[in-house]
Image (cartoon, rainbow, N blue to C red):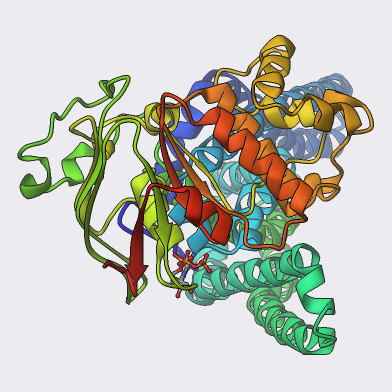
Length: 574
Ligand SMILES: Nc1ncnc2c1ncn2[C@@H]1O[C@H](COP(=O)(O)OP(=O)(O)OP(=O)(O)O)[C@@H](O)[C@H]1O
């Protein structure tokens, strides 16, 4: 794939949040507001323990007015905490929704404009998983888990600070005893997490891909009568995912050790507290604060450990999403002219971002192209002057379709150059190439919807008058009127109600709406009934005047009518 690198199955999670920041930056104000509200609500939670301690001391000192003040402050803190928590949840969920909506638009926009080879080289399910599954997981993380993560982390820090104020000796003992153990548990978890969750996400994507193919290739699976073979493969992927999930659960279980640490800490603290109170070194209130706050601390550490697993999963998903966004160029970005080597641009008119002439010769020079390691087009040089009418012929698999995709700029050659009117196609924006050179493929892809909705996908979004005009110009009025609903006829899921020949007619109508100077038609190989073949040939004949027509010809009648043919043999012209 000359244009883009392939996606990594397990992309690195290093500095992933920093790489993600440009996509989050537009929402930084609302995210900062949400984080501040979350911090304030956490501070209110931490304040509860000292207020209780203050109240207990007031009771032991028999100080009524201090007790009342403690009650009033406690109520105020609890109410403030409720309001701040609600506010932080609302803001974080809004920030999450906005970010995710922006990401979804961006991914679909970039995928829709992605080079054809990129889409062909990846399994649909993998792309689907990255553009829907990973985004959904991220939504969940931003909306539900991030507020908890912020709150809990801050609670842990503030609680330790508070304990230091009450008794630095007791706090240092607590920290010295349990911090190394807690850090050890976290390190043990982190050592396994990145790899385990990375493999889990990759296996999930593979399973989604196989599952998606089960639906899209249903006919191919059922027709040979061996769906069991496919089910066997699906089970293999499913088992792989189950194993990956089990490994992830094992890794997650490492964090359960926090529960054992909590029991130990509370017991140690009670023993120490009783001893210090007896010795007159501490008041009862302080010990109560310590027990309440330490329990709070460990409950939060336990919750934090659960969230740490989810955060790791979100990190892996984010890395896969960022990988996709990084590989796909932004829509409207100038073509990567920097990748052109001097030999291919030396005599071309390099006009980055604009400049294909209205008419011109379509010429290829020294074209070479491989799918992976297999060369399919080898050193092809050929020219089609304006108004030329030629056929590309050759046995199946000789490379005709691949050559057509190179000539129409849908693939970038591994070496060599394609020029229109002397301009290297790689130096202009793909949309401009599509306006000059249109390929009607063997299998015209249709979207689920009406004929008009399918025609509206043409660049420039033609209106109904333009559509009717194109139908009339190609002599297809009877055919369209014969469809149930005319232009508004429902073509079914992915256009399944149309035959291969009729799909090509829709392709020709789209080409007529673009009105390009060069039309390349990859003739449908499926047996067409004489009436459909005649309709198609008439439409092509009507579309031909004033433009270059290149036909990948399969039918003898088509070959006979073409003034010249170029034969392709094992990727070379002969
Ligand atoms: N997307 C792809 N990935 C990998 N290999 C491919 C791909 N498309 C085509 N090929 C391989 O490249 C070779 C040439 O295919 P191509 O479709 O260009 O031939 P063709 O002459 O147009 O065949 P046909 O007349 O059957 O359409 C074949 O061996 C084919 O298997």
